[in-house]
Image (tube, rainbow, N blue to C red; front, top):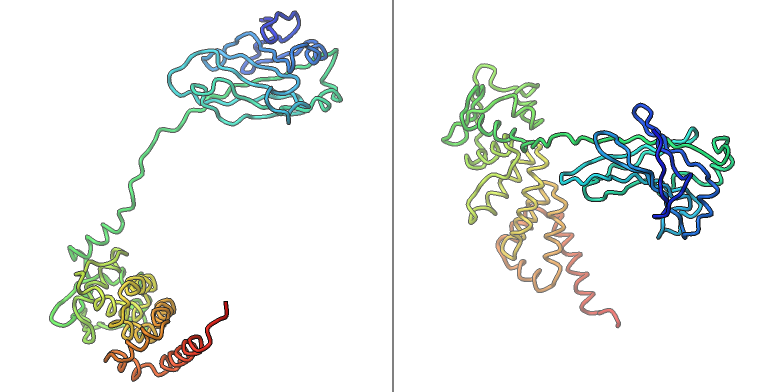
Length: 351
């Protein structure tokens, strides 16, 4: 089947011929040189409509590039245009090919943008030097690809924390018990061992306890701290605690996290304690940070003590006396900081 096309609305005897060949359409440009010399600015030739993939299309051939883009004047531009009017999204792309060149467009929603293609399909001088321009004619294969989007499948968020949390709550299949103070906590060896290298060594390795009994005593920890520890181990979330007790509980939990090598929990504790630094707590928090190697928390305390007024106020507290007894290395750092502050006050920088 052969049909003629028009150029920029004006009839043309030898513009474009569409020949249906199996799954592709052959666009034959007859009179290539005449298309360049058309007296209408940058000429544009549109083929007669053809059917492909259940829709009606036509091809726009622009031998001197697309209007409005001065960067493509040396190129041939090709566009595919949807003739049909569609109400629902129609995702499609086109393949334009010469024997020596092929271009596949991006996917376009033709219900929104009915013309889409390639502004720089081929450079004219490359085409003119090739053997495929014969008798002032050449042919371009056009193939339409309908892109069928996969059905939308909603993936729910992970519920592993909920399942492991229920395991702790129901105590189902528990195979070890911890006696902390007056309370007993059933737990699962495999979960504890997977989360903490210390529990792994204690329950499975050389430190293995409870070979004759499945009850392990912990005498140097409060029951509520151990409960918070288990909550984190099973759910990887911050345990609930009363607001007024958060600072003290977090201090105990930080020491426990360090004891069982739970680095994420330890950093969570540091983050929480940073918000509780004040004149009455900074000495205790600084001592805790020094003992458990919390570099970030330690720096935050030093920053808080950065003024002479604050430092002198903290020195007068009972907590500072505890800091001086338990962390002599910290005292040396504080003395150096105080000297630096004094020097800055005596010798302020000149403006």
